[in-house]
Image (cartoon, rainbow, N blue to C red; front, side, top):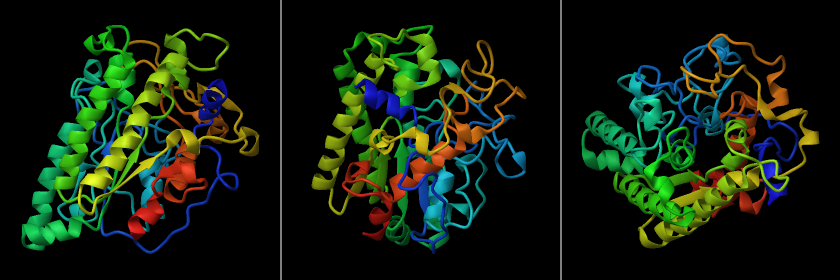
Amino acid sequence: MATTFAKWIILTILSASMRPKILIHAQQVPCFFIFGDSQFDNGNNNALPTFAKANYLPYGIDYPASLPTGRFTNGKNIPDFLAQLLGFPNSIPPFVSRGSSDVLKGLNYASGAAGILDSSGILLGDRFSMNRQLANHAAAIGQIAALLGNPTAADSYLRRCLYVVNMGSNDYINNYYQKPLPSLFSLLTPDAFANLLIETFSRQLRTLYSSGARKVAVFGIGLIGCIPQELSLYPITNGSPCVDAINIAVGLFNNKLVSLINDLNTILPNAQFTYINSTNIALGDPSLTGIKVSNAACCEVQTEGAPAPGQCVPNGSVCGDRDEYIFFDNYHPTQVSYNVTASRSYKTLLPADAFPVGIQRLVQQ
């Protein structure tokens, strides 16, 4: 277990050949819809009353024009790289600042601190939970139906699109294991909490299916017991480089999620759900990549007050070479990490990277 945990700290920096290069393809799907948390958020939290926002430097320091867009990293995030791999000329816009015709190419609903449970992230302030993101998507579908002329045309259109979902981390970080105020859910056993999450997530994914989604890639939760913030909050035991108890609990959820994906594909007609195995994507030797720092943030992090502890200090110092770090702040990876995650989830290097297929094959089916 400790070996696996240590390798997750590399957070998907490995691929078949060092850091992958994004190649531009013809657009493979008509639209791309994104649901998730801060790893996928590209600006939806900017105007919300919340500590979970990244619309200030040094976030975005390596984004075009050094622009802090609301992405919780130094540059691009996973949806940005996936959009490139899928052949989209531009990144998918956030729901809150969409233009009138943007909806036909897709929207990004992701929100920092969001979770499967509506209560997850509540201590940080407002956020678009998975249920609220689904409600926003329902509103977008109404716009699509109006643009295409009728609901039948919209449904046919949506069945050809790609949907990605990255949810669950905040249900652990900012709910089950939250500090300083423990959650009521912490009274549940890890297995019972994972069951609660899966039952709720199952309803949500079925709602997404009912709205017309057929090609859906669902990301598993990473080994969040290895992120710098959790290392600072919880004691390390048995010589492990990570908080084993958190990673074991997350593993329970991921195992149940694989079963859920299989059930949805079996039960729902024409459903094409796939599971992206974030942990397996991470395995490999970090010495091949130039990564030198795997357990600390690149930016100067907040220790208390606003913004949230563990996030970058506004206009604070940053490391000189961001490509040498796994983490940009105490929670979120650097752009180079996200690049590899996107590349390996799109075109799998190993069979265990995705179940049953990677995103490239998913959109071709």
